[in-house]
Length: 203
Image 1 (spheres, rainbow, N blue to C red):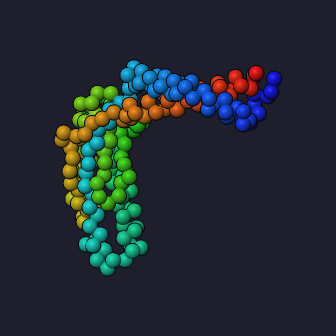
Image 2 (image 1 turned 30 degrees about the vertical axis):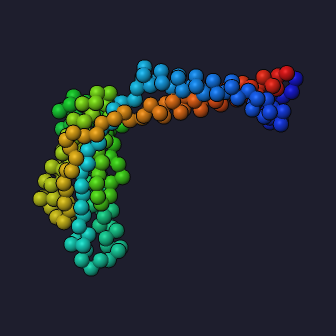
């Protein structure tokens, strides 16, 4: 018997191609398994709210010095990022929705690529309605607290904050069913190919 761990030979590859029906059926079976897993244990829903953040570079740095603008953006962006996950805001959401701060910070809430422009506030939950409410409340709370800090001088007065999406938010599964189907099919394809090659090696 040849070594099962040795590289496949040309005969092995020919045998694999001849067994195309076997691994096609395996891919179909894998996709079916992926669909079953998705139905039994679906991923959480994800909602997205959007807040427009305008740093007004032209007014903040009228001399248009690139280095000054860079540090200004970096400094103010960092302050706003810290605000988005601040104890005050997290405690407010925790009290309103009955979700622990640890859970909120542990992946239920996610802020996407903050920079100048639209900031997306994502919230995950198995309940689609709750996911939308949580994302909306987070975005609204962030905007209100940012405005308060701008008014008190804690943030640069040139920054403008506007909630652009907080009602009728798009809510969908965090991972689409197609991803489960694809992973199941690829997994069974690989297993089928390995099984065929091992059978050929053992003969």
